[in-house]
Length: 301
Image 1 (cartoon, rainbow, N blue to C red):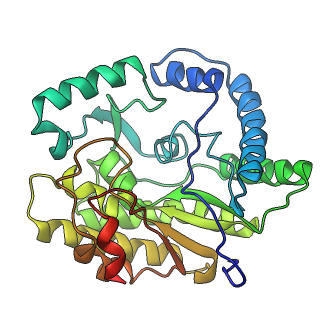
Image 2 (spheres, rainbow, N blue to C red; image 1 turned 30 degrees about the vertical axis):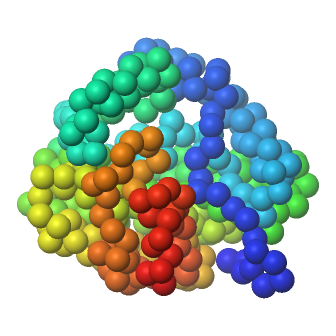
C-alpha cells in the first residue's frame, strides 16, 4: 500500500454513480425482469473506463473501478454464493422511524429516484454457504487491469472492494447455521476467495464494513449495545481468519454509519467500537467523519 510520504495522497470510499443506462438495467434485473447480461457487461466495461477518466481529472491518487460491474457494494455477492433462498425484510432505520414526517418525505424521494438496490425481498441462507466460482471476481479484476492499461494508468495505487462477512450476514439473514458465529465463519471462508483474488491481481483490498457501525441502528436497533459489540467482535474474528494469507499492508478497512441523508441520531459512537475494530489485521482505515455527528471523533486517535 502506497503511503503519503511527500504529500497527502487522495482516494475515495469505493462506489461511484452508475450511468443511467446501466443503472436502469440493474433496476430492471432486480425487479425480476429479463435483461441482456451481455449488455450489462458492455455498459459496465465502458463505465469503468469513464470513472477512471473522472478520477484522474479529479486528481485522485488511489483509484478503483467505481464498482460499475455491481448493482451495489454488497448485494452483488448473492450471485456468487451458494446456499441462498427464501426472502425476508430488513428492519427499518431507527433514526428514520421516530420521525414520521421525515420518513414519509424520504419514502417519496426513494420512489422518485430509485436506486439499483432491491432490498424489498432479500435472500436468506437456507443451506451451506460457499463461493460458487471464481469466474466473476477474476473477470472483474482482469477488466480493471485492462482498463488501467488502456488509460495509461497514472495512479499511485489501485484498490478493489469486497464486503465484510458482517454486512452480508445482516443483509442475508441466517436460517441455516446454529449460531451467528458459525454463520460469520462460513461467510468469511467463502469471501476469502474474493479477498485473495483481488490481492493476487496486484490490487489493494478494501473491506467494506459498514456493519461495524451502521448495524447498531438497523439489525441491532432494538437490542442492547452489548449484543452489538459482541457481533463486532465476531465479525473482526471472521475477517482475520479470512485474511490469514494476505499481508496486512495490502488491506484497508472502510467503516461507516451509512451514507443516507437521515438524522443519524442513533449512531454508535466511534469510541465504543474502535478498540474492537483496531484488532483487524489491516494497515489502514477509511472512516468518514464528514457530518456533525462524527466530525469530532478524530480525537479517538
